[in-house]
Each structure stands twice: as structure tokens, then as C-alpha cells.
Image (cartoon, rainbow, N blue to C red):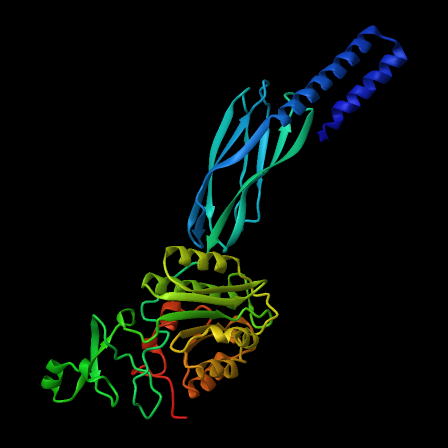
Length: 410
């Protein structure tokens, strides 16, 4: 409780003068002040007992970069009107403040609306208030805490990755381990020269007749008939691997990529699993559907790069879950990835590595050096650097070769 000390000083001076002079007027004035202060204090305390507030409208979730809107309601259940009420919402929502002043009549209510921008993923509580109530004369004020909170989830941002490929189908019978985009699908995007090992059913006969050379059809990645049925997204959230500041960190880039891939493949009817180890373990078996997508995005909203478990240890503990023919997308800023990835490749899985270039985020690991070892082992690699246009960085048409293959004879 806060008291205006000048009022107390006046009260004490009046008492001293009344005692010294014996003046009836001063005594009456002193008694009047005491009664006035007592009534003001009592009024304030009664108001404080009958004030309540809550969130009346709040979307359960939003995404980073989107605006959100919250509606609040405060009521006075008492028989006395309130003087000034100052309400400040307590939350850890980045860049969002909600403070308002108003009066409430007896048995009255007050509604207001607040909005902000989602700046960082996470789960936040909205509706925890610190309420400052003042008596009608402004002599006293008291602060009360009201907690009628509702959870609000900010999902990570997602971007469309129409030309990302986890791995095209491995064509059988090749002497070299090559991965081609020439697959069967519904919409051909372009034609190119025939390469030994291409499927004859993809030959574009009209162009072949026109040019005199065998030409085959290529299909955009979103229409490719992939050989795999399940997709695993594996996130390296080892605390010592990540670097950067604010939202420009390898951690936030990894989460954005994982969320975008989960949305892409689930929207296309694929079964997607998620594996990561942050402040706690996250393991979601491959499923599809809107509910599963929301579960993955909820997990990605909460995950932090605070794990003591390295990528090698994470994969070693869970590699039995990777069935032959599954596609594994590993997102990591670490350099120590070759051995664990080769190990799961040997299980018959299709592995794609998305390397976050730690050097560009202020770290020490150069992704280009890591990529050379991976591509020499036949592992498909994308490199994402700080500030890069992610759609282009994760576009299979712009990596390594116009024929889109990664792999050499071992």
C-alpha cells in the first residue's frame, strides 16, 4: 500500500498544534482528517476486494511476424464505484506492453482491446494483471495481482519451399551413385538431355524427334513421385553448436527451416516425424494431418538449443526408428556430422543435410568444409548462411550441378 506522506505530515502537525494550543477548532479538524482518511482507506480496500479481470477473446495461436489481438474485461462486483484504476498486464511477450487507466461504476464493467506483433516464437501467458487502485481523494493506493491467464502460442514462421528436395529417387542400376530429378510426376517443368540411367518412360518424344537427341522430362519437386513414404526432420540443438544474436541465430534459422519443411510435406500428404533434443527431448513419430502439423509447430515453438546431447549421440540413440527407404533431413550447424550421417545412410535411408554456416553467424564452423566431406560420401547438402534468401538457399535447382546430383563413386 502506498500513502501520500504530505497528508500524514499535515495530520501530525494538526495534532501537535491541537495539543499545544488546546484549540477546539484544531481538535475538530484533526478528528475530521482522521475520519476522512479512514473512510478513504476503507473505500479503497472494499474496491480492491471486488475488482476482477480476465481475457475474453484471444486466438490460441499466431505466427512470428503476424499481428495478434486480445480483448479484456474488468468488472466491479462491489456496491461502491471506484476512483482511478490503473491496469498493467504482466507478461514476457517481446515488444508488447498493455497499460490502461479507467473508472468503474458500482456493479459496472469495462472492456478494451489490445494488439501487438508476434516477434518471437514461444508460449506466453496473457491475462496476468497488476491492478493499482486509488481511493476517491487520492490519499492511498494499493496494488493487487489478478491472474486469470490464458496461454498463447506463437508458432515459428514458415516459408514456402516449392523447390526443396529431401532426396530424389535413386535410379537403379547406376554404376555411380547419382540422384536425379527426372522422376515420374503429373507436371513436367522442363526437358534436358538424356543421361545414362534415366527412365525411358520419361523420354519426351516430340523434343527428341525435333532435336535428334534423346531428351527426358524433368518435374518440379512438388510433383515428384518420391521413393520414400516417411520423412524425418532431425534437429541438432546441442548447446555448443549454435551461435548468433537475437533472431539472427542458427537456432532460429533451424526452427524456421524445420517448421517450413513440416508444413510443406504434411500439406502434401506425407508422413513427417520430428526428432530433437533441447531443454527436453522431442520425438514425434511420422504422421500426417492438420492435428499432427499443429503438434510439430507447437513443439518447435518451445524448443531451445540447450541440449547436452550431440547430434551423434541423438542419432545413435534413435537410429533404430529409421526404416529403410525413409528420408532423413538433418539440420545442423555442427562440423561433426559425417560419421553419424554415413552410419544412418548405411541403414538404407536417404539422408539430406542442411548445414547452417556458423561462420556467417559469428561462429567458427565453416559449412563449406563440412559440405565437401558429405557430398564426397553421396549425401545431398544445402548450405544456409545468415541473411540468405532461404527459398533460394533451399532450392535444389541451385546446388552443386544443373543435373541436381550429389554423390560420387565410392
